[in-house]
Length: 423
Figure 1: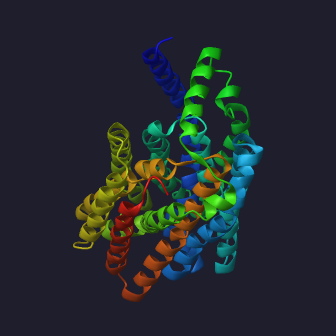
Figure 2 (figure 1 turned 180 degrees about the vertical axis):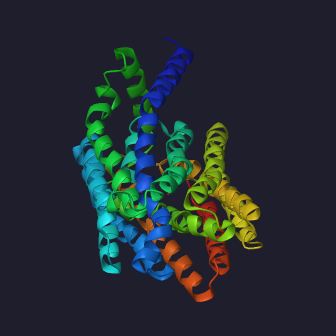
Figure 3 (figure 1 turned 90 degrees about the vertical axis):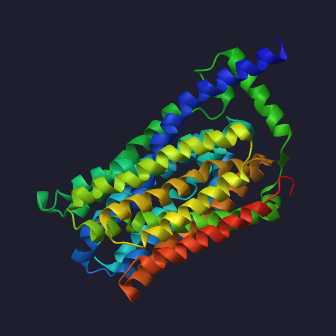
């Protein structure tokens, strides 16, 4: 077989693997992200029903990330040892149970407790999926693959907004409030999909029954060549690596923005439009739809050019500009347009960032490195909502908080230019 034919065969096998794996992983992440941010829609009713201020709500929304961060590295190391299939199934089933239990919240302390437990249950899911993808796709293919998978983040907003708005309209049915129905019903798919993981996912190419023997051999050889170009660090070596920590600091700014945006978007749109909860759900889909398109386009361009750093920095500046412009007017059209600009820029960062983050390290150290970056980054999931909520309580406006978050995103993303490929 010629080298040209070998490359063509590998390309076909990678395309087949992408078609087989990414749609299912995409569905898993839609459910994960929806269970993580549906509290933003629940807040339209829950805050008033339970007497929560913006600060209380922002703290409870963000505390999810503190437990997520605390347990993420151990969770991902366990995943690398016991296998992604078993561990991802465990994660999904437990977080589905906790998510549905959110319907029983009656006080701020109960809200904090269940959000903390939700983060504990979900810890390791996202970095586990990223690590799983490194076992199937070489570094040169990862930006578009990760971007395709991570469009679930924004697609959860596209489909989740209208669904959540509709569930809120069940207020009073069966003696439950709409926000209680939202938590109950949106937790169930996680449990069912967790069971499906055990049937659907193959751990490695060698174990995939849907690949022929020549296809397995071609893909395994491709991945072996790719791995040979990477350093295989121990967990300790990965956690002390300067490049890993620099990437973690860069990534910190992304969840600060993403979750401040996601958790407060329904309230910002409600304030700007004065519309019903269902209409707010529909409006919230627009920024996420813009983000989904941009994420795929930029991820593909990054893979085609092989460039990562500027594909992180330029979208960050676009997103920061959109956030800043959104403070110039409170009209609903202006708000939707500028926040769509903010989301399309932010979403575009993910594929190139994770392709850069996974380009130089393999083995168990890669699992630990991915988990560390995501752990440090996800402390931003606490900082962003709490910061925006506290500033909103103090100023009775989202404007100053959005400007602060825009500055954090732009400033932090500049650090990506310092990331090298050989450290």
